[in-house]
Amino acid sequence: MVDIMGNRDNQAFAGIGRHLAHDFLHLQGLFPTTPPLFVCQDGNRFNSFKSGIGSYMAIWSNIDYLRKTANSVNSHNPLAYNTKSFTNYFSSYLHVFRRSQTEVSVDLYNQMVGEGLLNPAHVIGQPYEANESEFERVRRSKWLPVYQRGKDIYTVICARCPDGWQDGPKVTNTDLRLDGYKTTIGVAEFREVKNNKINCVDSESRGQVGRRPGVGDLV
Image (cartoon, rainbow, N blue to C red):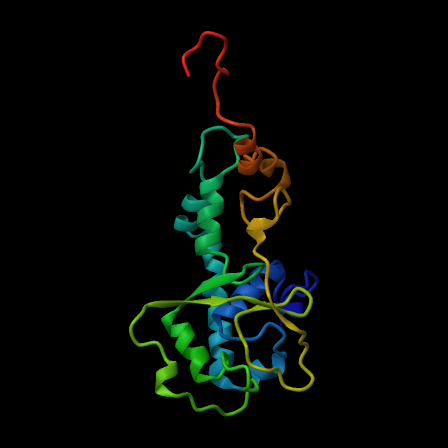
């Protein structure tokens, strides 16, 4: 699915791209390389997928999203790196794509548990009976590691793929916040703006701000 949704020449999903495709499929509880037939052959799964697209894409024109990420929320200086915009985008609107861990709602977590998607011994799509102890009944969310399973495939799902599905070695993903000055994801993350981002490590190595004490100064 992620290749189809991320294909710019695909008329059904034009404009979504791999970032949004990964995050949308995550919110649907689907493995990124799930074949379309797997979605279409189950009525409930198909209806959830179909209705979910509209709800998910409506986020990007929502006034709350625009206020948090596309406004001058950090500085009135147009050249300043917008730390607050990136923080809001990363924490609220970026789920699994190029992240190392993510916060999952209790509903989505329990859905994945019920389908065996967090069990490394389970095969996706096969019948699964979860133990009651596996479900979350107290907290409102759970933090899960994000894995990279093959080239540019990001998911929290641990279950094994059926034969014929694209898959790869499961490794913990590197967080995009460690990408330095490269263009990544979000309104504030273009290289031209990130060039003005303060290098905290470099600034600390230069010492404290102020005039060096001279001869006769009290130290």
